[in-house]
Image 1 (cartoon, rainbow, N blue to C red):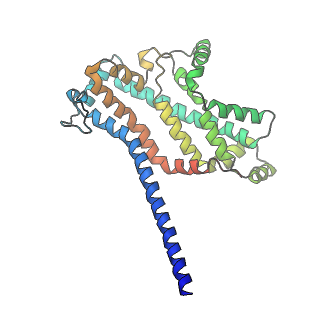
Image 2 (image 1 turned 135 degrees about the vertical axis):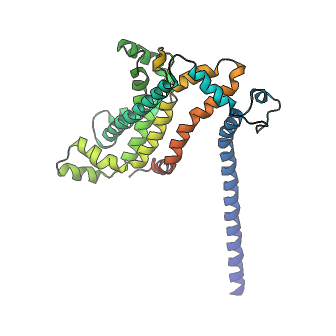
Length: 292
């Protein structure tokens, strides 16, 4: 008996050692991947506080020898030199971002509910088209979008920035995956009580989709905040911050510091939104592929 117990103890220790070794290996791999993800953000922040003469030093340094905020001052000075006030650009970006985020959540939620819980001819085909459309960039249909907007007289208006971004295959896909987890018995019980589809969608299903909605808000906000669309909006008073900042940053090597400062300035709002809702994103991604 004693020999048997010793053998079991040794086997248990070896198995525990393998588990600890595997955990350490996974931790090291995740730490390495995290470093690769954080490094570009760190370098952007460091480059934004470097003087112009330090930006072209070779070999490049991972820190600023003489950090300065002159790049940010130059960025705001350049933006204030335009004939349109800087506050107008901020308003345009906020208005477009909020409008796209709200409309995308609204239409994606309704479309996802219909595709997930309503049976009708062609539903599988539509779902397949949505999945396939995830493989393509929006630039594939850019010419068609421009023609449609020109026919509808939306060029040089806010609608040229908002409408093309409202329809989001990724948003519909995420919401459909989440809504498909709702038991059909809940839908049937609501129908028996006399509730219509619109009421079921907005009073029963959508209130229980907070993780998916938060994920969609993050993706929609990030996409809308970075909208430039300089080829559909030519009037200065309708341009957004990314468009104006990119114009100011592409004015030669002398404004390379301004470009780095602009990158940090544009990076802050999406990061803040993501940090406020990252737990909901993780929960949604963990359950997005689970079927009932």
